[in-house]
Length: 219
Image (cartoon, rainbow, N blue to C red; front, side):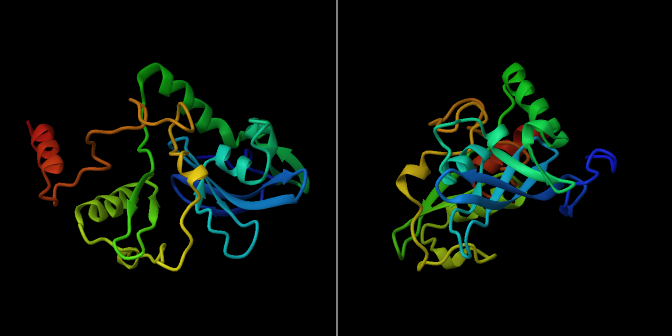
């Protein structure tokens, strides 16, 4: 994704073929620096895992959501407010190479209606709390897909232990943020609502949506 020269001086935490993960921060005028891990994906998506305190329950956040979580929501300038260290100096994201794929995908989204899979919620049948399912990858889409088909789904059914019935329910004010590329509070549009693709449909599944998609792709 990036050459050694492009990321020289950046403290890279993890690096894969289609992502890079680094330490980032957003400074709150009242509470100081909110630390987090920023994952930059080759698709252009940016995922932030907040580490402002041990056991932070915010989960994966978009840059706008992280900015709001850090108390900077009135600024709406996350590219300037979220920063990283380069050679020991604080540098805003807008001044780094890390937004290269994000900027390309954003331009492409408006020209060709490129879509992402918006986050969805399912209610646990035991604790009755709504749980967020991010759908940025095939694995995450499969997890949501299986939970949706399970009429008795409960928090403990998540194989990787993300949820527990003892965990607090996500705040209502944050549930409006669904990860749409066009608008963070979008209620559903052509950029974030998918009716079937290779990421969210599975040939091994017998539900009607997956069957119809498989037939269409084979035709």
